Image (cartoon, rainbow, N blue to C red; front, side, top):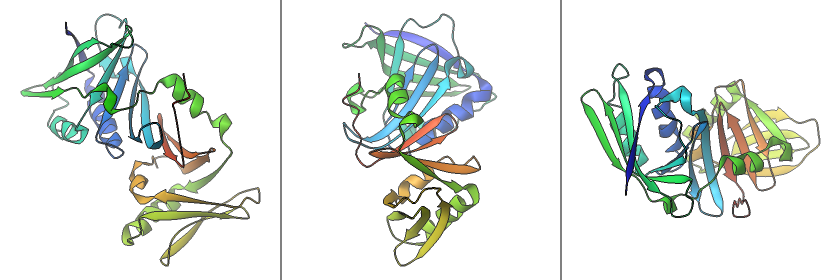
Length: 260
């Protein structure tokens, strides 16, 4: 038997809530929300066991949502066709009271997890009804797995790009037709380039490191450049760019299957 729970999205957080879902659609058109009393973990990814790209946000549940009794379970919501979902929500008015009602059933794999079957967003005269996606559409990843795998203590090295240089990289990349940006590190000097087009020195490391990395241009728009410096943290099989309560992981080869 399906059950329902209703949340009120705080008026000063409606735009931010929608914007975060919208940002995640730059990675994939399927977005997952894992909601409990403490946090909402929001993420999207490309790939299955081997994850090619992954981005997530972790936000405080009570800062965004109002609801009566504490949750006694975790609520998993898969939003398929999330791009269209966001476009529909763009017609909400922040001056209206906006509620989110979720119809759910207990997960067959965990009695403490409820899987959303449908979502209804109501604001003013607008009502948006959306069927919940199937749980198998997106690999299940927990906050504990993320904390373990993306701990900066485990990074091998890092380099940074100033906010102004990163803005130049985005402008330069939009001019030329190459799909990738080369990231060359020679004796600690970090240079980004496109073949036979441009190159830009962005950092000088204290160590005489040599390495060659590549960055797919389509992920440039996924990088949070609100801070004065964009830091690329290099792990064994992926690079990690941390933003304001977000993680963007771009893999060389990444596998969560060995995580509990």
